[in-house]
Image 1 (cartoon, rainbow, N blue to C red):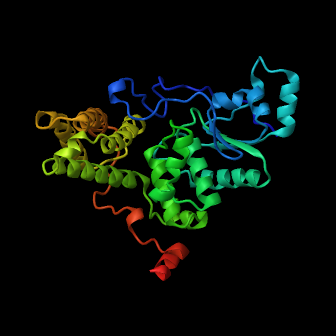
Image 2: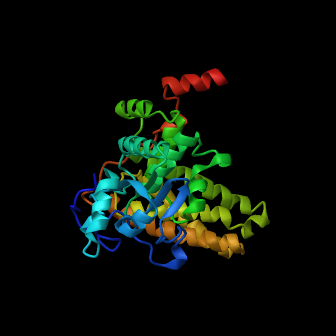
Image 3: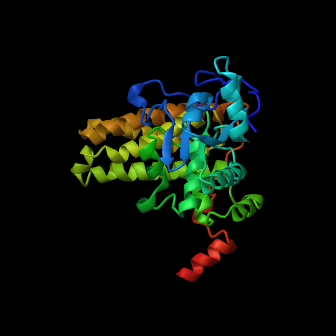
Length: 347
């Protein structure tokens, strides 16, 4: 069956009710920009945007037989005024659609969506069908589903650099970058042996608290940034290395765009530390010079802007309770279960 009629308008990045805050200044942009065309990730598997699946001529030419829509509303490609009736009939008779109701926010748990999406995608690929996974822009939600599907299908690791799924997909579609919360959930999925039942058990017993996981991830990033700044005093060559600072920039811009308008209860001490780190990054050029130093300064500006947004929310009357600063990430704990027992046997 074809998808149902669209139920809600797409608000776009300029709306105050949208899921992210678009970075306007090019000097503060690290994440790749939007890509118009759909991307063939691996044989039979495409990743794209809402606009791509609304192009029914393209859908038919590429012989798409399954569509995964992961957005807050369903998309019906046949509701366009410039689509012929014969093309609409072809779509209704030949394309299966799976709708996953999800917003692109780091605090949303998407494991159930991943379970359903991965199963639907792999069923199609096993039958030799062509599948496209899409969200609004083909950057975060759809990329998360595709990455999870490849992890299961090909036995690939998310974190292992040798078979790094993120790099594999990004090589085919440069603009992908799942929001930081989805990335953490993919890491947990890997840690638990890519077993959705184990993931469900861990989440059900409250062992994975996404807001606290985000706080730990931010803390670790600040640790790494400060360690790299300290290393510059011992190794001047680091002043020219911009690539590592680009990695920091990806993460911090992601936080700014997705967490710039969402209060996740970050500990106040962590916010103070972010402010201090932003100032240090901004002052590096007073001591050093080089491409790495310049990039670090850009990271500092983005970090400072994000800190200002988070601090304002933390000081508001509507502020949520602060997360536990002593929380240990589920990614750093033994969570039990079959995958943990398997890892112990291999040691």
